Length: 46
Length: 572
Image (cartoon, rainbow over all chains, first blue to last red; front, side, top):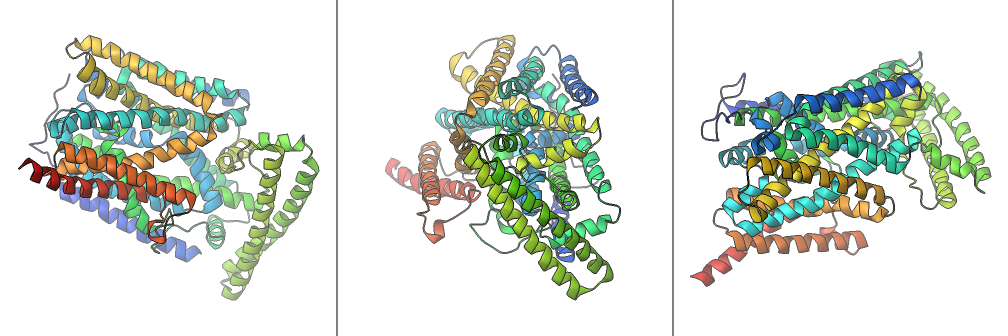
């Protein structure tokens, strides 16, 4: 069995970001951009 | 289907099962069998999470839903990335810290054994029945399309899943889901490219998108707030957010996927991957459905997509009625096709006035066409009262079987079987884990060897698989039961999430208060549903089922708090 590398006390940072908050912002901004794009796409072609 | 299609279908499925069994043979300890030895990398976790959620119905129903109702279903997934962030911050570190095997194990640490057992049993009942539906729902469609016996189709899907899930446990589920996901996404992308390529030469891709948009199929975002409307932006980022938090945070079939990670970092990244890719993936599937709709504006679709049901009408006393309706349908189809060509010409010329005129004409013809389809459905119902007249689940595979080249048809069937297998495997794996860890090991046989628990888990996986197959086989006789089971998830998820929210954030509330609060909240949710389904709900309580998740969760928190105040003051 491979030991779990950490148990919740010692969090590694995610790739490409210094903190996890950077990763979370990436998700939120992507979602916002997708909603805007979907809306513009719908309006343009309707 | 041709011989080549059968070869593609069977070789794909047999390869996945054999590879899964071979690659994961010889699990001897329970940690390895139920948590995959905690070796999974983030991308394997992400794929496993997505493959678990993507059932066969995702690939059968979603394109059909887009065909009938446009792309508004995508709004349902807007809450998912936010749920992934919340779970990543809160649930995942705690599960890791306590080194739990199941989500419910945590509840004993925080509350007591009865709360743990209650949530575990609720999960087993709900997910055990749902596993039967995960097999039955695609089986009924696949058996119709392939001309197979329904029981044999159930057995085929169930047996394949049991073989590798019993043999390799969680590791086999994760391992096979990589191949299954590759088949699913590869097959769907090829189908998408094919449908666009098969449009008439005079119709470009942009023209096709214009046709879809003008005919109301690109209705992706609706900012109007309406509690009664199941899919709009607000229900997506609020009600669906609660549903996704429940599903990914408290449903063992998902929790088990990210508990296989090497570390919190890997598990979190797996959830992030799901958060980033899920909405685009649903967009692609829905868009393929819309393109199938556009394709059928130029090549006449069947008036009813369930061919077996249609053949039954043709052999009944209603054959003449059906023939007349089909002729009418063809006449309107030809008129509509002309009008759509006119619409495309107007769009390309930039003539807005004519676009508006042609659009109105096309929409009115579409309405006529839909009303004929409705009349056909009425005839089908008269000829065969037990037949389901909702044919949208047959749209995509009918398109595949009638139009795609040999070989690809087999691949697309492999997509549907893979999806059915990937979600069923996760369910059986989670049911076995919960039965072993939360009931058998905790309350029945407490001090046995690791090997004993591995063997028990294998038997429980087998038994749950058997129950799922038997339930799937007899489901056709209990159509109302399917609706009840589908509803069961929405009715219980809110209260279960409420218990977890209290466990995580409201340390003041203790076990008895949350236990009674959860039962009271559940009773109210069931009563609200009863009022909604019987049409007696007052305006402020009229809501789509997604909102039950919010109501259940919030009520557990409120009741738990109030009860704790009362219990606390009495104790003093």
